Image 1: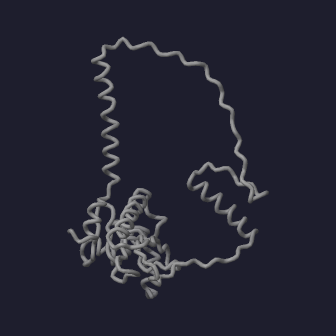
Image 2 (image 1 turned 135 degrees about the horizontal axis):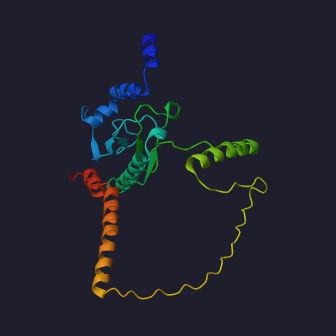
Image 3 (image 1 turned 135 degrees about the vertical axis):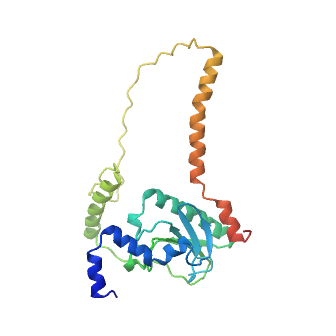
Length: 241
């Protein structure tokens, strides 16, 4: 527990100073910098994946963003998309390289949810039948009025924050699906065929070829950015590297 003096010091710190202090005390930030040894299985410009030294099952992988973020809501969208995409590939490799029968992928978000470190991470755990890991959630009865109250509260906030244009679900007949209204398409006047260009065929062909190049380059760039080195991860798990 922090002393009264330390608590007073924290109160007077700016958010930036508090984050910097967390980085200094975060073991995973030191691992990312290479100051603490780890069993690394993957590394790119945005994240690393390491083996948990206290695994729930052999092959338990932790995927961490290289920047320090305490909990998931503060992680930028581009980073969260990237590390979950890495988690998807790591899961596939665990199934393939370790002959796992399944994987459990989860985030402990906050101390009461079981988060033990101040650094956000994704756990990817290989699963085998009868491995005695209990991830079963209890099934509790819920009052209909409580559910409806929660639905209204969450719907408003989620719709606002994510800017989703979803129609409000009617309260009456909750079990009956809402009928979709069909809108008759307006008849459009026939479009006249454009006159053939008098442009010479050679010039027209060159113009089309130039128009294609930026699109092709853009697709190649996007594809390259999405790649996370699946083969590299597979080699690392199979012991080729």
